[in-house]
Length: 494
Image (cartoon, rainbow, N blue to C red):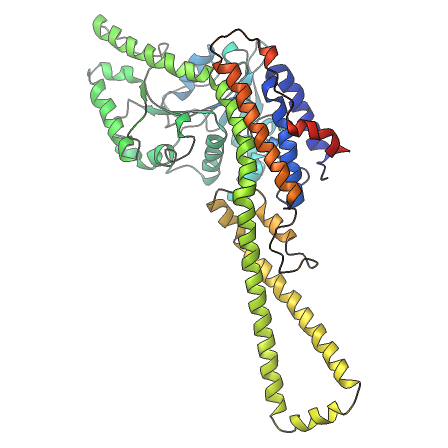
């Protein structure tokens, strides 16, 4: 058994206590994550103070991204029903703002360290990721993040992230890293563009990062593309032309299907004098706003399925992607070690033959062979030298493979600590001919199989809750069935 540290276990217990009150359907998934952690500890994929359960946000997460002055903060304020965020025609905030619910009637703000140090929030320990791409910036977390609390009932049970204006030409690498991290964690991503700037061609880099780099994702359906502040087109009465220009621009980036929303904020809109035109604009605005708000309200359902999917995907990735990746790395290490051993032996043989057939080497060899203790001594010395050379070679080969391992893993979308896992497979006591990674055995396979079976049970329970056409069952009747992971928990802990 590979128990996690007390800190991790306490976090998981706190999470279970929260889910028991807020979403009992997901309670069993915590135990499934514990099972995944045990497999990962055994293979070296996780440190003992890490858990797969803490790598995903358990609260439904909505992120608001977009260009400068696209009306993101105004939209957030309108949704919350309070002026929580500063607004303006120019960039007024250069930090990511994580907004969560508070029972207090007064809105308040906290520094970025409140997010970086609290595992309950989606940007926990993001400073480490920032430090990897921009040395020294991880210590300046307060310049990138802030936490705000709001008493808006619309925010209860979900977290909202308002991003600074996106300008890919001017953004620092660290800010782009946070943006990508947030996109990966989010259940719903609202991408805002500004109808007041009908020259989308000038924002090619921005479009690439917010559109082209997202449409090929397996979760591309969580992106909503929104053309905001459409009321400004009323003066020229050319909304169709502006919309068409933006549709062509994002179409050139590959987005040829899907909904393109057009809205404006009723609290900050210009007055449209023509009554018929105003009614036409308001009808379209209200229709799209209603759909956007509906998606935002339903994000809790998407989060439940996404967490269950994360359980199944993690188990599947370990067996079908991580293990083969490690096996390929071990194979490369073995080949390089054997090649190194062969080169050393070849050079030693060449040197020996050269010495024997040069000068008096043959005569010295014959005289040495007449002494009974010399030959065994030479064999022992030669063996010791070869063993020392072998372990030196295997160490150098391991370092050469490990050097590119993290980059290779990132290219394949694997984010476990594969370099650490590989190092465990190259310890001095482990033979180079072992093809199975450390910790990967029948017991680990059986655990992963149980986790995937339990994930199917979780999906069935969610389906019963959200798709039962009769509607005559209570939520209390839908407590997840006792999974195999839970049934085995008592035995495995003992």
